[in-house]
Length: 387
Image (tube, rainbow, N blue to C red; front, top):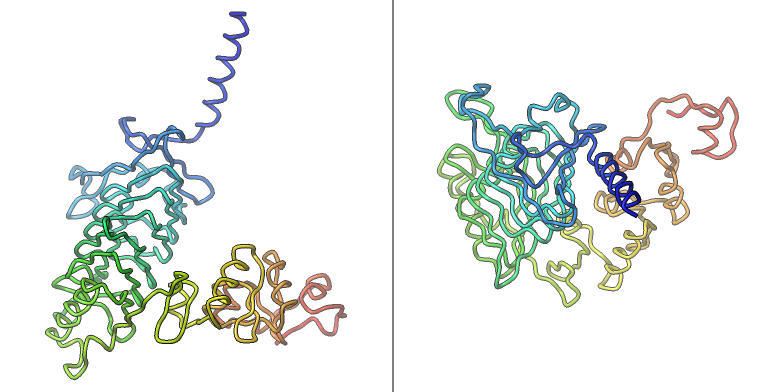
């Protein structure tokens, strides 16, 4: 009996080692309760024990590493031999917080955050110049100062808090990027175009600016829940700072850059008499026909099926947001089943859904017979070139 127990114990040990192969502790000293792995361009961070919640620790700036004048962070993935391959950050369920300076100055484009996350520390994603896509989960309760400063984010939705526990957005969270000076004036690039703030979100007055930058008011739009005064005050503070610096015409009002919204009984976003299924669709002015249609859109999208709005069919929420309609329901189904291959909409050929959303159809391309058959039906060698 003891032999069997010993064998089982050895097997469990071997399995545990195999499960942790390639994973490293989030702390160089091995004291953290989280671990990470870099594989196929993805930096994954997860709890060391999948039965226990964990946090990504704060990383104190280390002035023994003089890469930057203000010193840099010792987060281990920053100096990993595979750091240069990272394009995506994936933080897995069970992680409850992202510590300060955790991913500062990294070059990934996408950050996937879990539904267990409650806080993002100061400067956590600061100067991630290529970060253009991040999901802020509904569980999030605090975004600390400078957390998203200097990123390439264009559209951000701050999730709803609760009356008893509002979501806190601190100073300089959306500060722009400084690329030096032009004629003695700081040259700031501000990527942010739309910011959606819910009712129970407390926004610091200077969340959107610092003494050396303001949003580009030519494109910027703030969406505030009707009852959120802190959201409106943050916009006004930023706007008046812009006026003081001569970056906005004094004849304009802050309200020109503000849209207030409410939510109906079903939780859909409402502006005047229009309903929107999601905040992103609201910022794209992609309205539903009615509340039932909003629900049908969400149901179909969750099942990977096409849906109809205003007599037109759409394959995905992203395509709907961009106004990229299919020719009919069957065409939408063909797009969804294209599996990365080119597809046809009307008389035009597209390489991908992203190209379709942006209107980038193929101008010149020679197809094989099999490829042409896939996107245009039965054909021959004289009809497989598309201009």
